[in-house]
Image 1 (cartoon, protein in one colour):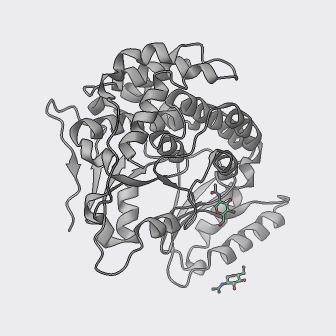
Image 2 (cartoon, helix red, strand yellow):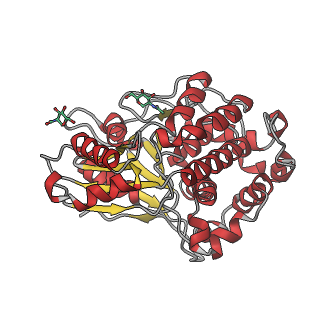
Amino acid sequence: MSARLAWAAWAWGACGRRGASSFRMPPPGVDVAELLRDTTAVVEAPWPATARRPPAQCSVLLFPGQGSQEVGMGRGLLGFPRVRQLYEAARHVLGYDLLELCLHGPQEDLDRTVHCQPAVFVASLAAVEKLHHLQPAVIENCVATAGFSVGEFAALVFAGAMEFSEGLYAVKVRAEAMQEASEAVPSGMLSVLGQRQSNFSFACMEAREHCKSLGIEDAVCEVSNYLFPDCRVISGHLEALKFLQKNSAKYHFRRTKLLPVSGGFHTRLMAPAVEPLTQILDTINIKKPLVAVHANVSGNRYMNPQHIRKLLGQQVVSPVKWEQTMHSIYQRKKGTEFPSTFEVGPGRQLGSILKSCNLQAWKSYSHVDVMQTSTNPDLDPESPQ
Ligand SMILES: *[C@@H]1O[C@H](CO)[C@@H](O)[C@H](O)[C@H]1NC(C)=O
Ligand SMILES: CC(=O)N[C@H]1CO[C@H](CO)[C@@H](O)[C@@H]1O
């Protein structure tokens, strides 16, 4: 199925086809459909069926997650069609001026989970608008997408599985629930660059035992993100993470860094966030994606609405298996060409990870910049070395 069709589906969704009226939860208080009505001109039906294309003509879109936010993001997108309308719709759904926060900060405020998840979501879909404007063929030829953590919501909206304002509302609920769960326990995330001989689960087990000796019952410390070979993020109680940092040498860790997040995401420390998220997901209209959306694990694609609801709920307490996802998207016979890959949204983190997972695939990577203010905006290709 054509990605262009999928893109159209989300645009139409935003325009009321299956629009905000299907909201049964607290109404965002706006008619998003109304807001976006004037912006449909770019959507022309009917769409031509996409023929099978050689791999090098296909594209893959990757959507970043929390941590990619930066003050000033979105500025480089405002000149493109529909982008201001997306931010306007977001202001109504969220009840505050997201664009203002993205453009002017302060950074501490933008970095709060409750703000940065919606901010990354909207900037990513606005980046799709830019890409669509500058290189429509990329959207048309998209064969697969994946999103990192909250990025999965943007990937699903892009793929036509959810409508923009409903997806954003779910992200808002998710972010609020995760923020609250984070505040309940002194916890965090530690990124670790190990070595071949590092045994992450053994290190985590010892860190949990250390916590127990300090009187912390039922301590959490486990791998929460698989990034690339020998690189993991570990989430859990702060005492456990401090223990791992102090004992780096023993576990053959080359580098460790505490991430600037408030909690132990993607572990059972987030369990209190599952229920509110599941509840909102039950009320929104979810459709079968029109482009392959890869979930956290190798070979695991979102199949149908029930599957999407279930996995998005589980996702906040399960590890992000990004390395496996990259493997599943880019694994191919030797000599087969790679699709072109676009990171749509703030930051270039997913590009660096791709480089470490699959150097050949990375050679066809570019990043859709959301920061720059140039009057002659253009894509910003990463030059392979
Ligand atoms: C890593 O440690 C765990 C114990 O936590 C053990 O079961 C496993 O076999 C170890 N793996 C390797 C590769 O040594
Ligand atoms: C959210 C999600 O897709 N979680 C799945 C990740 O993969 C494991 C299997 O390795 C599943 O059990 C999770 O449901």
